[in-house]
Image (tube, rainbow over the protein chains, first blue to last red):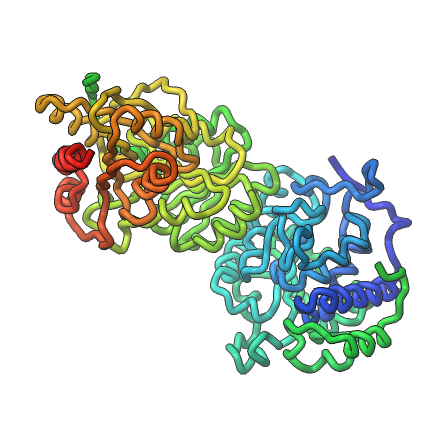
Length: 298
Length: 317
């Protein structure tokens, strides 16, 4: 099965900017509503995940009788996305809902009892769009490598994307996977490291300096793509385009994405403090003033 | 006492290798992954016939579990293989999140479990794995007793959708189950019907239980022997039915007393049919170097120990 993207669905940079503003609104509203969750990394990665789902990934555009996109967990014939740093689930859920996998109204159930939108992404409640649970860090690159290997065996030319945090690069399993992917020439695998230089306990350099992440991936045999500003959609599009052009050349690809945690909400930026903190009513109002409603709130 | 004989001794891991070789021919979606222990896991035949369906992962077990999850999501049936120590405790969180909680169809197939790994000593003699895997929601846990049963279990798992932990061992042991047996996951195997005591055994202890049954018969004790190859889901009905008849139980496993088959049986009986139980297993200790036979004797995991516990438990009735 080959699933072709309908070109008319390919969003322009301007359109992506509009969508991502709404996604950021969703994120802060979701976290506010349950007074828990992780807004910082969600806001920082909003541009890349939105760009992947609304422009760069080939996904099955068919809808079911319920009007939602048909989701196949196996991702056969499609590009696949894995979120390894699962704590930025508000972003993942917003993008999936806005893309049409489930009703945006369901975002209101985030982290609440009996919800499909668990604190960290899970398959257990069968939320369309989720292929594996994540949240315990360091596992997503391995899972994505397995999916990329499967595509190679099946002769499926889809691309497998995986997003990780930079603090997450401190996990040993990342480097097990980092040596696996080049060994098997998984040149259909595009990893993205959200290099925002912050983690829960403070700046990454202070908590556990993981030094030159790019040099490490190069040494492990990866092709690298620099993304100087992961919060500039045009640059994000260019980086993903460049990464895709490197496909099929015998090396897995990693995009080193410099981003700003909390991007889009001024008081959440330039600090690690909003990694896992929910805004109060006043802070929510202040945040929403900075994020135009474009697609309509859920 | 029903007679059990054997003509040869083989290792259960070779049963796994034979099962994989057959799956290589019959199940095109089955894949094998290994963390630098191909010869120990007896995967040579599978790899020779299906090189494209084998993934060498090197000494990186955590990644192997994740890669297996990715392959399973994509429709393959991966068997992730290594020693039991490295396929359970070392990768517990990877199994928990990427396999069990994600309900990916990954089979964790592990060798060299328990004391019978022998000379390598306690670093490699995992005696806690059944407890860990039993505690994991959704995990099927299987510990077969001989070559033929391990082969049959390996093949049966390919058609079972869901995460599973298949545990086997290193030493050669009598091959006493039928080569053409049908392996039914979760269904206990009645080894011998008796009326005085129920011996519930798993893995290498099943043969010891048969030996014990013969010794007991000479003393006029009629033992019912049940092989629980599937620790989870436990065949509760078979155990309860047997204990209704015999009134007491001895459990036997190559594992810690904490959290293994014995614990599972005690939990069952205390809820539905409180009865005297004696347990054979390793009591809150690590193993050590030695030959398998020496170790099983020193830690009381043999026929003689079973006989002793049977007499004790009958007196408690």
